[in-house]
Image (cartoon, helix red, strand yellow):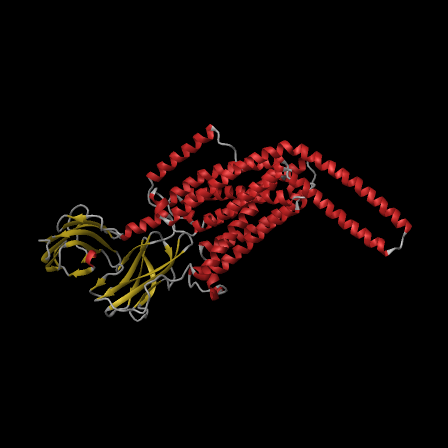
Length: 640
């Protein structure tokens, strides 16, 4: 439930929108979900000589095992040697066998990003000339297929279980303490605990296959389970199970000794203790998500993780409390209906939760998107727009619920009086029937027909009592309207939870746009002639410098190339190796390797460089400053 928008609230919302615009306009780099941003050899290139190794660069650090990076020859035979290694930063490489032949090679990778999600893909490059290959140029099934679907279902159930568990107990302690004795609410909260516990065990079993083979048969592989337990997501799932044990004790007290105590100072003290303990356990459960997913990587993780915890708690208080209210409205005993005061308290709780969601959601959106264009240009942004629309719809329905709450308050006294009158009528009728039955029993003490008649009358009275209670319940238009509006809110909440689950498994808008930018790097700027200047940084010690390249006369036909490597201060820089390749992407020509001879310190030259036609040629220069530190930089040159 929520309140009508006051001028003060309207100004607050406008301020939040202004802050959002400022943050999105000036966002810096961050990532979540690793994306491949570079490779050497690059995708689709044709190299003259077989490379000694293959290296991949990701948008963030990833976890690898021995089979995470594979290189397959045209016949599908692995040609990598040893395990992949982190050579620098976010670049990982694997060595290749010597003496590789010509043809098309396939590089496949299967890694786990820092936010716990598997990332897989494949691409090809060729040595000498392209050839047929038996390996399909497609990503592996890791993170997808049947196991991926089961894992996504487990995540949905775990979120739903947490929301019902935390939100249901908050509704009882904060809004309706009498609800601790309602059997339907007890079953709801216990069901949330069971769902979260089962889903956590489910995810723990599935994770090994989900991040490696993707095969259903490997779900019960104890070796994979042992590997999962050594990872950050595995440790988070285990800690969640331990916290659920504490939650079980909390539930036992809440629905045991707490609900049996009479109102008084002792019960108020127990309420305070349960409230503190409940917040600690709920925050711990929420932290098990925050420390292993999007919030734990990228920009400002020290701020993002606490914000994520608060966001999850606010979601649970709103949606979980809404579910508990719905169950109470439909399933509470007729003699203990939900009071209007309890509904008003939940309205205030939900209103505060929505405000918290707005503030924390703005921050999370800035981290994960970084620009306005990412809202419509990335899948993450499109899902986020859908989530915002669903939240707005829920707030709109909640305003109707608040109006029904007001009517419920106005008619509470009248409804109670009507129910009391009906109950009195039923009591009189029941007493009369009981007297008649007693007289009949005296006249015919051993008649079996009387026993059957008494049982039939008892069933009729029970049916009449049920009909009476239903008539009174349906006759209360305020309560009936409130039930319908809360049911509509709950239906939207189910869809909202599905969209939220999909968001947690989707590559962030920032990372997707960064990967696109990296793919097209070097093609945005075209030199007006054959003179290029390309700064480089191999990432190692003494790895920075500038490459100056001249093509003369920069026309189709024979050209002369001069290449100079200098340190940032302008001094000549002798590096162990420099390679040059030319590609005309518009005509799919190249890359054409250029062999340059070392002339003097920091100077390489090549004569008779043949450029077959005019066009916008991409000039790629690979600079190696040590045995393991190298980088490829590129720029376009217009050849007339």
